[in-house]
Image (tube, rainbow, N blue to C red):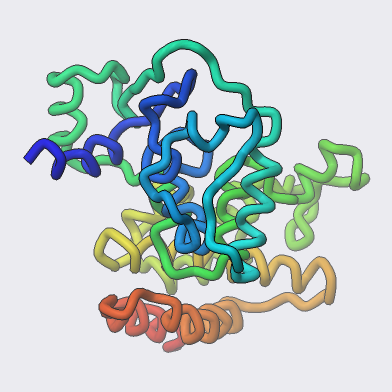
Length: 283
C-alpha cells in the first residue's frame, strides 16, 4: 500500500537536491522541466535503469546514463539538450530535501499535505501542461520557453537591444509583451471568443478554466494548440506581412490538431477535442 502511494508523493513534492542519494533521476521532480520521464519521453524509452538515482547518474562527476546502444534521433536530441542543461551540476554532501510543489506552506507535513490535496480547484502546474499532452516536441519547447518568460516578443528583443522598437506589429504604440501578444491584442479578441465563448481569457490559468474540455491531456493539448497558432499567426505578420483573421487562425488550429491526434496514446479518446476544435471554424 505504501509503495502504491509513491507516485502521488512524487507528484505533489519537489526535491531540494544535494547528495542525490534519495532522489530518483527519472521520476522525482528535481529539475526545472519537471519529472524527466515525462519531459523527455523519447530518452526515457531508451533507458536501461529507470530506477536510477541522481547520485548514480553523476557518480563520475558528469552525467552518465545507461542507455540502449542505438538511440532514435528524438532521443539523441533530448540527451544532448539534457547534457547541456545539466553541465556543471555538482552534488553536495547533505541529505536531499523535499517540499510541497504548491500551497501556502511548503513544508512536507501531514496537515499541509492534506490541505493541498483537498483544496478545491487545485491549480494545474505549468509543468503538467507542458509535458502531459500530445503536442509535437517543438510546441512543447515553445511552451517551455513561454512559461519561463523568454518568448521572443518584440518587447523581449527590444530589451536585449536586438530591435529598435517594442511595438506590437498589429497595434501602433502598444508594447508587444507576452500578455499583449497572446491575450490582450485586439486582433485576436474574436478568436478568443470563438475558442472560449463567454469566458474572458487573460492568462494560461484563465484559459484552463475557459476551454470547455475535461482536465488532463486533452485540455493541456488545447492550451498549447491555441497559443501555438496565435504565435504562428503573429509570425506570418512579422515575416510575410500577412494579417490572418480569426477564421484563418481557427482553420490553422484544426489542421494542426488533425495531425496532433495521431500522437495521442492509443487508448486516448480525442473526440471531445476534435469536436471542440471543429466548432471554432463554424461562422
